[in-house]
Every structure is written in structure tokens, then in C-alpha cells.
Amino acid sequence: MTFWESVILGLAQGLSEFLPISSSGHLALLEHFFGIDEDRVLFFAALLHLGTLFSIFFVYYKEIGALLRELGAVFADIFTGRGPRVNANETRRLGFMILVATVPTALVGLLLRDVFSRLYGSLIAVGAGLLITGGMMFVSERAGRGERDLSDARFCHAFLIGAMQSIALCPGISRSGATITGGLAVGMKRELAVRFAFLISIPSVLGAILLEAPDAFAAGVESAVLPTLAAGVVVSMLSGFFAIKTMIRVVSIGKLRYFSFYTWALGAAVIAYALFL
Image (tube, rainbow, N blue to C red; front, side, top):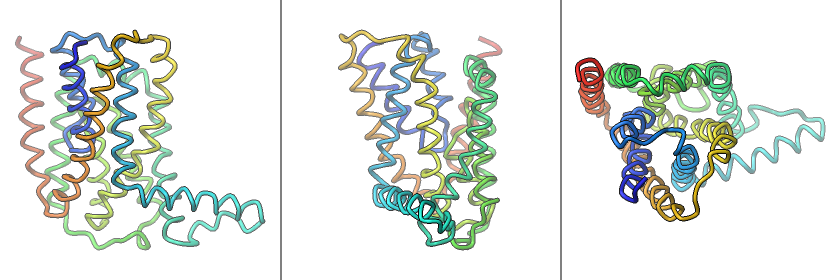
């Protein structure tokens, strides 16, 4: 893999992880056209996920810090016999909702990991996923402006959004698009839908890194290419930061439909390419 291929892959990962256009779909397409064997870039893929994870930390560092402090308070309450006190405050409630949202994603990911891995190598599957992503964005754009804030949201809503996130394990289906659609569908305020979507991606991305780590380390990497890989990771982190900020703005003003047109066009082009070329 060349320096510029690393940078392009990093840019695609950073932008498409948070913009509703599917990072898995774009990376699969780029690897196909660059002629890169997926098994040879497992370590790099794990690093790219780590780069986008840093993007979330940079944007939501205050919320993440508060959640970590509240996690310590939960353990203290449990050890002193007071119980988890799920609704003790808004931050603790948010933390438990993130935990609930993670359950369906973890179950689907563990049980169907091999199925999704096979789909990743199919351009037809990637194209179909992009078409589905476009449909979700178009539907969510039609959703009314929700008034549900965190105190009104229920744990069943968090589970539903997590189930939407599990759908995004299919290549071509956007994680951010699916989870934001889920949040808007249960009536969340637009700002909350975006914030919750990105926060619940943290355990999901961490889980993906942990699952990829054994194979990634087994595949190994030559020390000579580490600077090239580092460039891609830095680009993924910076572009991810930009993409999160962009999504916050786009969802707040109700312009998600523009991403529908892009993913529909790309999905149709990918399917046509796979069938006729």
C-alpha cells in the first residue's frame, strides 16, 4: 500500500464513518479498485477505527469524562449496597442507555460475524447496502422534529436504536445513518439523536477493534510501512472530527436527504459495475 492510498483510505474512513454514507462500503470499494487484499490490511483497518474513535473523544470529551466519572459512582453505589440507581441523574441514565443500545449490536456482531465478513467481499451487497442507506436518510428526513429529550427517552428506545446500529454491520449500510434514523424514529430531538448515535458507536467501535486485534496482530506489519499507516490514521482522525461537526449541523437543519441522492447514485453505479463490467 502506497502513502497516497493510505491517506485516501484514512480520509474515506474518517468522513464516511460519521457522514451517513457508510465507511464499510467505501473502504470495500477503495480496496477493490486499489487491488488491496483485505487480509493484508487488517492491522491498518484496526488503526483506522482507532483514529475515528479519537475523533469522537475530541468532540464529546466533556460528556465522555462525565460518563466515566459516573461509572465510578455506579460501582461505589453498588459496593455500598445502594444499587446501580439507574435514574440517579441524567448522565447515569445516559450511560445505562448506551449500555442497553450496545446489547443488540454485540449479539448480532458475535453471532453473524462470518456472514458479514463474506458480504464485505461482494460488490452487489455493498451496492444494495448503499441503496438501503439512502432510503433510511430519505425516510428520516421526513420524520417530524422530535421533542423527546433524555429524561423522556425509554430504555426500549435505546434498544431499538442499538438494533438499528446492528443493521449497519452489513457493508454499505451507514452506522451513523442507521442510528440517527432510529433516534429520530423514536421522537428524539435532533441534537440528542446525533449525540446518542455517536456516543453508542464508542463501545461498538471498541468491540470491533478487539475482535479484529488477534487477526490483525497475526497478520503483522512491516516497520518500514508504519509512517505510511500513521499518515492514514491521522487523516482519519482529522476528517472524522470534521465529519462529526458537519453531521451535527446537517441534522439540525434537516438536510439529510442530500446524502440519500449520493448513496443511491453510488449504490446503483456499484451494482451496475458488478453486473455488467
